[in-house]
Image 1 (cartoon, rainbow, N blue to C red):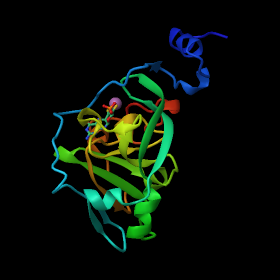
Image 2 (cartoon, rainbow, N blue to C red):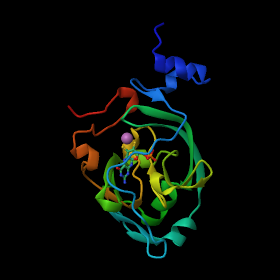
Image 3 (cartoon, rainbow, N blue to C red):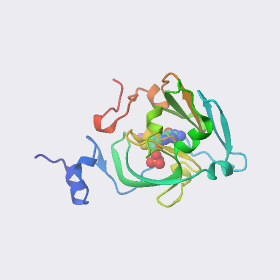
Image 4 (tube, rainbow, N blue to C red):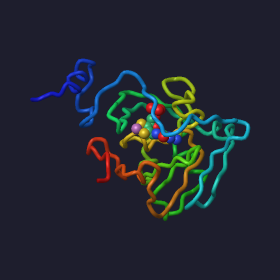
Length: 201
Ligand SMILES: Nc1nc2c(c(=O)[nH]1)N[C@H]1C(S)=C(S)[C@@H](COP(=O)(O)O)O[C@H]1N2
Ligand SMILES: [Mo]
């Protein structure tokens, strides 16, 4: 069977090559990627809101968010610029804990993540309900660093990593799907790395 150089590197590193999506290569490092600058945050005034198609919209302070139950998850991450990182570990609040507070209406089928500086990313709500999805406060056992999204980032499994909004400030539930920041620039709405859904055209 033909193996690309990228696949051979995955095998040499001891991983199943099936974990590498087409057109990706494995990196041991954790690259930093975003549009714009790294925002600062003041945790005394910072808040996190859940709005839209919910019975109880909420606005949580940093302390309130951190009093919710937390879990740790491990997953592979894939950037559309072709790097993949395996076994990235994140700790944070699972969506289920937030969902218990807000009680989504049955009309809530899509979500838009809202971040500092107007960055947005959209996914069907099913992806937030995946047990690997997380409102992450920690990565690799330590608080997020500013460049990786401190104090809070979204982690969305099974999608290119642009759906995992850094510097997250809110989740909006919606009955209709609305394209986010990169999706409006022509990135594929569904963003499945194994289907190589990079661009919409
Ligand atoms: N707020 C915000 N989140 C973002 C982005 C961004 O530009 N702004 N870029 C996305 C992209 S394209 C990727 S690959 C990941 C990169 O996360 P990392 O820098 O922690 O590796 O963040 C995603 N989340
Ligand atoms: Mo990316």
